[in-house]
Length: 396
Image (cartoon, rainbow, N blue to C red; front, side, top):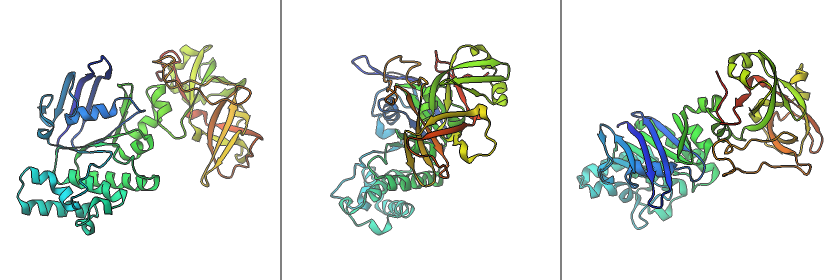
């Protein structure tokens, strides 16, 4: 086991496209670090550079106590698990798992023993004599994991290993992979585009956008304290509601004007963010997570100055919760606006009156009806604020 470090790593392709910009990361010995971001953000490129499958343009790649910039992939002592499993269809499960050991000329008795142990960990003992074509998708994924485990590498690298599985199996396998990694204690870099997968598996999560590191932190800290509007909008499902609003008031008595409705900000939150004072009388971006909204009709004593009135344009009843979509005449803020004005921005959903559609996650006890008025009380102690010019979080 070893730590993995990237120091100011850049990747520029021959056509001039720069996929990675000054990426610095430190993955501790035994840590499970997830790289996440939208398609094309550079997460797989970063992983492939650690593996040695992509050359580094500049910077340092360190595994353990040595710089591996010029070290051949087979000599880096890492094991990679691919999206497509890459199993040999004509070999048995046992032969697939032990193939790398056979190439390394490990004694046959040791190969048998290490394959047996890996199969026991992965619940594959009953399938060792089968071929990959006789296995389910989840079992094939376990075989690919077994091939990595038997090598006893310094680090595991996993590139979207669950993307080919159905939704239910994906949930099961991500729990199994996380448990196996904890038991083995092997340093692991895991790439996914699925932020739910990232949040449930990683000790820490690294968020990338267009090759730039946005934030690396624990899943809970990413959720509670996003550094910028991109991380705020990317982490969380459904996504955070982001809207451009006017900030009014003085001191700790602040309010935002949302679609002509004044909403009071919790005084304790306002006091904790002195940086807001510079934006009074100006426009800010307010972030409201769907789960920080509730149907006011099922709450007692809901403060009038924290209620938004709209109508339910779509209701998704999920049993344990209701996802309600509602329109407001408040401009949305794209998570790509701040740094790449106009690029990659996805137009917000609008209703036939041109109002932006926002989302709330409310109690299943809500009597909300499609097309009818709905009053939503907002937990304004949970609001997030961002500078509309830079996209950075407004804090101190």
